[in-house]
Length: 375
Image (cartoon, rainbow, N blue to C red; front, top):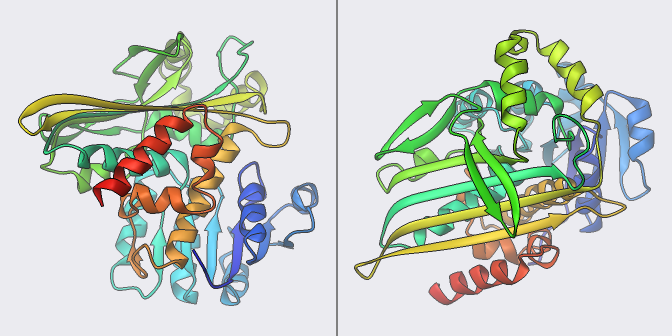
């Protein structure tokens, strides 16, 4: 796919932002990685992209910064994205983010009505890649009964009481565990509590638990309204994690004291590169009058230079930027993740890494070939 080189700003020089900046710079774009912390920028700098000290909460400074940019990718905490998106609209800068926050996405959809720029929230893994997989799974059936999506970003070697290590954003994790979760039940979108709906899952001989978390479905409940009877997204963790989190967030009422909860997670579940990401999608529906089931399992391991969650989130986001620049996505207004076809997504330079670097690559390539044949 031949694309025009663009001036791209990446906001947030944390675990994911620096990887996104590197991937985009490697594709030839003029990339500037910005953060409020000079120390964070110094740690992330690698010579492939420029850096600039910009506090995304300072909207006047942000407005000046984005005026000279074609695209902005926000890898900032979700609570900064409303302001960033608003400034992007004002400066005519196409906008991408990694948010899982439902309220933030609803706001971006609202301001996207009638705008000349594209607003593409919820890029990355979940929401993001998982929404493209879910929509593709639904399209494989003549009529859809059930779509289940399960995603886990986990330590390869769990050693603490939480059986978990923070792999990206503590604020995003707490948000997912506290907010109501959208599902489709008996054909109707409904809200269910986070940390509920506990189920046991066995994948490739490893035992997991799965439970409701907020935001993972993205806009799929709206896109597949009236087309699927039951659809859910749940987070995968090692058994026992949900009960501990329920004790902390509900029993000790730390859902109302997020600063204390943030300190606990930062202390008890430190970041690790020794992680694994597991993606499981299954669908049940009718094909040619017969009830059938189809499934896909993908697994990604971290490397000495990049964790699995860094790879999957950054590649998912950069693939959407590639699709936009290649004319494979709407060029203005609010853009859903499932506006991208799986075929196009996996054909991008970044998206292809989600097949080539997965233990389930054969399954992903098979899905890719299936969509090409169907086309």
